[in-house]
Length: 224
Ligand code: SAH
Ligand code: MG
Image 1 (tube, protein in one colour):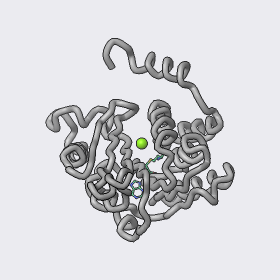
Image 2 (cartoon, protein in one colour; image 1 turned 30 degrees about the horizontal axis):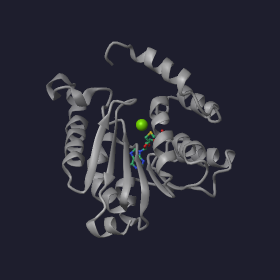
Image 3 (tube, protein in one colour; image 1 turned 180 degrees about the vertical axis):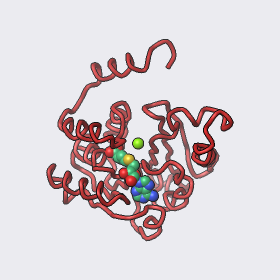
Image 4 (tube, helix red, strand yellow; image 1 turned 90 degrees about the vertical axis):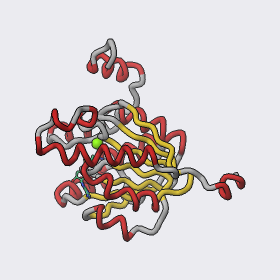
């Protein structure tokens, strides 16, 4: 990270942007239990992005214990969005439900239990913002459904696209077991960067994020 250490950067961001501490105890619980929730600097970016776009309908893939859903709803969207979130791990889904209750979010956040690679096909609604934060080797598989579910002008935000910097390395520098994720993540990034329907950027925030806007068609563009 240039001349500064990552740690110095984190401290600087925390001190300068700071922000809402309402969910601090939930963050601490997740960190204690080794649940991989969004990093603080990703959270700051989401606060800006969601606060600017003000999405009404949000789809999240990868709920874990509900930290990012609650952050999106309570902090970034100022309690003005509806979220559908998908989690396949039963125990984490139970914890997420309990946390949604605890923070008064049960009317705004609905949890779907199951494998998103299967569940996405059944979804019919469209979403202004989709946050993809699930198994990294499956991003590419989910992309066609995600594109279908995104409104024109809608935004797809993906977390962990750098896979702890593995994505930047040559596949030969990686352990054999990490090569499949590496290959699929590279394919996914190539795809979202080349897709004519998407405008994409990749940013070194947290574990790396990508952000893509689904282009408006000429017809819908001329109306606005
Ligand atoms: N977004 C959360 C963290 C999610 S961690 C936060 O920042 O607070 C990733 C989660 O995705 C894990 O709990 C894992 O069980 C879930 N997951 C991975 N692949 C999935 C899939 N195909 N369908 C549903 N959930 C999935
Ligand atoms: Mg993540």
